[in-house]
Length: 292
Image 1: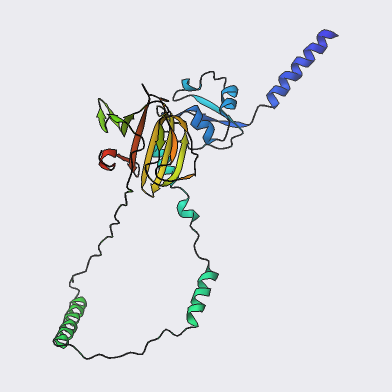
Image 2 (image 1 turned 180 degrees about the vertical axis):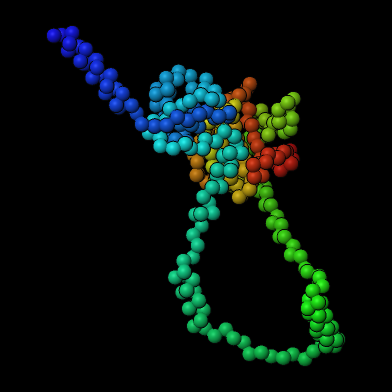
């Protein structure tokens, strides 16, 4: 009797364990993605992902690994580079700008219609030589009409594209220290910023006013990192921090302490990795920082 009861319990346990498999999807790890960024993107705790997928060391995942995301119903885009973070920061901004409704536009027209803006026409005397210019313009327009009727080509004025000047903030140095590694190529790798050597725990300050669009340690090699948006196209990056003091969406002022110098991520010693980006393109920070 006991044996039958034990077998029955085993069968029931096996049956129910199969029926109550947690709902979710699998995410395929891509180059540059970390378990932290995957957890943050899917709004799942890092501990839960490690437990469900039986991962002991979250730094050991590699491209191609299948990570089960409990509760997820669709694949999500997981940022893997600083450029990805910057590109994602612009999504939804244009949609958030509310257009005036037809009712509001109608009200504006009606309001404007209540006031008579017409101004009586006043003919001013022609200045010397102006009549000749008017006659020339009339003759020219007649010639163009004749050419058009013949089907002959006539000159067309090309519209010039408006080039908007890029506004670059007046930056300050984010930390006091010596540049230990400049911007540019280091062997076969491109260094997208400058490294500023400073003692562990030195305050890091915002180089200019802006909004924090990223604060975390999800990108491979960068450690604790902060990205600040200063204008629609200008961004700064602060990496390898010991600790971040700001959060995503927070507004910061120039000179405000946003973190402390550390050696998190792929760093051989305490320093600040600092970048200035125009759009997603990194530029040499020394061109925009004040000379010392």
